[in-house]
Image 1 (cartoon, helix red, strand yellow):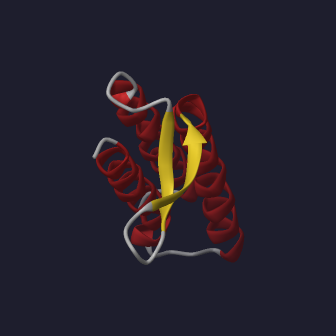
Image 2: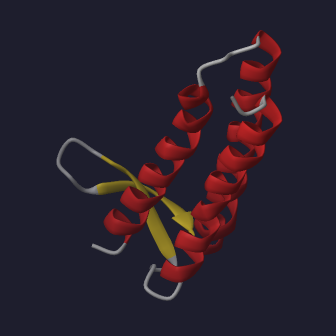
Length: 102
């Protein structure tokens, strides 16, 4: 079984992949990226492109580290628990890029 430190490093690296995704999409994202949609399907909240490209990955890494530290502190032995935050971060980033370019 791998140590908690190994899982923390791996999950943080996966969270950091969100930066690669947003940097790759930077050229196709609009200046103001829609981040929230109303019931009618119209965008109701926008973020500046650079906040999405750099801020979202930074937040993903921070959340991933906090979750991993909490899991390690509890002595969580189920390795999959360390990878839930990175999976959600990557899916949310992909959705943000997809919806932001529509």
